[in-house]
Image (cartoon, rainbow, N blue to C red; front, side):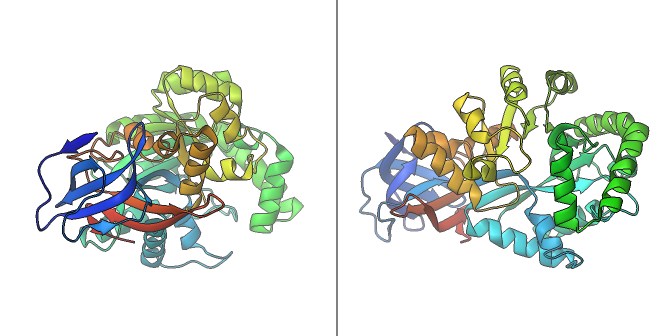
Amino acid sequence: MNCHDSAPGPSDMVLTNAKLVLENEVVTGSLVVRGENIAAIDQGISAAPGALDCGGDYLSPGLIELHTDNLERHMQPRPGVHLPNAAAIVAHDAELASVGITTVFDAIRIGSLSESRSRYGRYARKMVTNIIEMRTYNALKISHFIHLRAEVCSETLLEELAEFSADDRIGILSVMDHTPGQRQFRDAAARRTLLSGKYNMTDAEIDAHLSKLERVSKENGPAGEKAAVAAAKAFGAVLASHDDTTLDHVAQSIEHGVGLAEFPTTLEAAKATAEAGIHVMMGAPNLLRGGSHSGNVAASDLAEAGCLDILSSDYAPYSLLMAAVRLGQEAADMAMGLARVTSAPAKAAGLDDRGVLRPGLRADLLRFRMLADGTPVTRGAWLRGQRIG
């Protein structure tokens, strides 16, 4: 392996003595960054002046996160506590940079219910505007795209969709349906436990909330779903399904032109989705925990069946690297594990300028070291050749 444009120059950054995580293998070698891009990859140790000795650490592409609730967690760090958007965005951005995520699709919900304690009010338009403004002023460490999560079981989805356009950097639009008894929460007891524990709702409040959801879904669901599918096409965004459970759900996703399946809840649905050529994504926390907190299919079962393409940190940013490393360790193929959080999400999102260590691509990089127990620890991250962590 010897991929290079020319010998390193005085202004180049050289990272050497690193385990380079390439597309299909891991090799010890050196990587040269020129400007914003990777200029060269070579086996062996570089003697270039100023080369950074990585001491045998892994060097991989920066991680790519397609779905994360982490921004909302920073918006409301405690029940009833709401922070300004700017504070939430900066904290979210810094946290992701610290764990090696260099590209994120910020998951932002559109579609609300009036008088509901279990949902934020309408916030998406303002939040997206704030993220774009902060990008314009170079106030963020990493690369941000928008992932609109369109809730069809809502009262405001059509109005909120009309607030966005193709200029809003929307890379993914997912169609969600949280109708009681469907998809993620087929288990009614699991949903009641969530509403009680997370929102401190009484039994009477839960009954009223679920009853309202059923009514709103019947009245607004079909029109909301149709509008969401049309909006994804208008925005030029990848259309994603969410929590497909049955073969009928998968058939509907295929009909809509879905390119990404988020968190299918059954092995049957996941297999059918993969067979249809749709990228399958599961939660890294699910993999690390050994199962879904909602009682749905385990990510490890999908990995075993060969239908797990992409990992998402969901609500725990550091889980992304940990889960990818675990996959790689269990399969004795670290390149395969890391591909689930680098090249595979890049491909699914249509990003052809990152996700792989290759000359000419962006120098979005992650350096990490393995502890004795196999836990990965981040040692540095770069975006377009500039250190961010």
